[in-house]
Length: 280
Image (cartoon, rainbow, N blue to C red; front, side, top):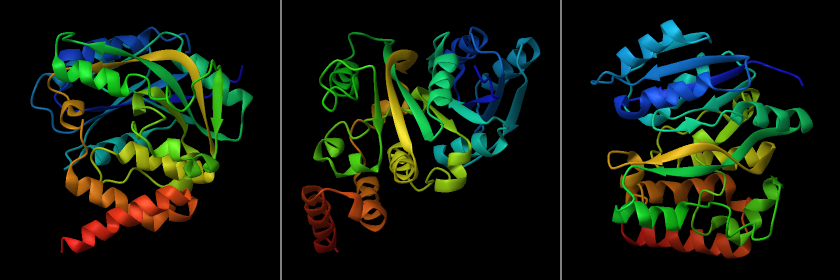
């Protein structure tokens, strides 16, 4: 198997609670040609101490960048620009990679050279099974592809035509997965640009739309990562898209993707835009 360099990118902000577990999961990878890129957004807790200690013990090259920004998108983008790998694998500070994650995703890239992104299934890790919001989140977002791929499946190949399917824009809006659940060719950023820093909640979703315009995406029906829910995380705040961001999202859909949408979805976004205009 071809074994290109993979950059595991970790944007950090006050992540001390689960950061050790995230970093330890890198050391368990069956794939060995890895570098680790850590971009810290001004953490006030012990996150940097944990990262510096990890750098001294890791079997992989570890590069740590102090990057104070005003948003998560800028921190994600800093990971991208600092990376050297042919492929990028995001790992959020709360999450974990399962041992075969990198190897299995690279294997898919080796089989399909024309794809820009591979996504996998994720296990939901919860710190409080009795939490009402976490139970509600799991019901709503636990299986992102359930409504789109209802039969038994091994992998699905998506291209820009998926943007015309009305099911693609039904809740949950993210049918691909959080960044922890995807691996990307670094070259895809040269084609589609970096993450949109104006967005805070749906910036990964909008980025996937851009990838689909230029390249195919594969989703494999393997659980290769753990995605954690806990009481302090952004997911709790983002169960409902904030109104301001939703308005911006509608504007982006109309400006950048309107002709890629189904007729029914075109009508929906135009109605939303009309409602926006009536409020001014």
